[in-house]
Image (cartoon, rainbow over all chains, first blue to last red; front, side):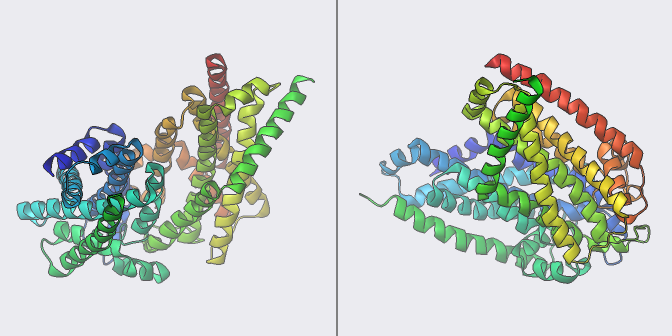
Length: 250
Length: 259
């Protein structure tokens, strides 16, 4: 299982085409939005004077979304190249295979969260949760990445094509931007407020954001944990079912 | 067959083939129509509170302000994504067959440019209809709206010219990030969400020198009936469109030389 985990981790971090969107794309978007939307902090009801502190949470969630794409693309490549079929012929159990893949994805999640933590610290984002908050962000980043990564695994097993898996990203990206990513929900109006309220991404972002803005408030953190648990339940069960079907003898 | 006649024949043939392919393939058509709508919904809807900032003075309102941005973005990206089709055709070898069959090879990139314009018109028509339906106010005169169309056309050619040059140089869709990233950065390092005077810090300095800032200010000015930076925007856009057409021609020769 650890060998599978190490392979899954290295397969992502060794490829610049996967590492760039994972680390630099969220960082570039953060830099642009944090500067372009600074004026939003002048709105009555905005929770902080630093837009960077407010917006950095989005980078963690974007990273988790890229975990979905990368995990799915890597597994689809293995399926297309025949590596997955050869793996199925070994005595490796399905649980160990899935567990190994998820551990590898979670390790990438820790790495990318660490990078966002450092970027935030260097750029001047205030982490209210301090050192324990930093560890919590790493944990949330790891579990969120693994949860979405399970979605990538399920997609790869279902679609069996890296290109098709990559096509899922815009779908999730739309959900990300139709959330409280750019402004808090109390400053959203009309239909957008309704959509953001029913959008699970709002709660995931608000959980990460709460650690920066106020430390360990139970409500937002429970919301984020519930969304992560939902991804594990939904995507994890889909991945298990599809893996069992794919590796069925005969 | 005279050279100009050959040019237009090739242009028409390439344009007809690629436009047909674009309209028949939902995986090409739908994203190009949906993405401007999603961005418009996200920015005009999700950031509408920014219209209540004390220093925000744009009479038609935040929806029109964001429509101006989406218009420029859609024009640039329609050009850009059409160049992806060119890169794909170069990678698969289809364009090589076109090179062999064409009486005038300049007609090949010109045909794709015509498709870029058609794609932009379609995408902008859809987003405009939605924007008007949700209450966008347009206060520009018909003459000003014609100038807006001219500016939009030049932006399509800028996005296309830049990316087509890259496509012809590298002849693979793997060059996608090199086509996309500079345009993406130029678009967002401009006053995308708030007016220039509300930008703070380094982005304000960058936006001051960014040509897209001129296009956005001119577009928003034309929509509000009070054009700003119009002449500068039109001249700059025409100059860049011409320069990037030169860049495309230069790389067309490289593609021809590579066979």
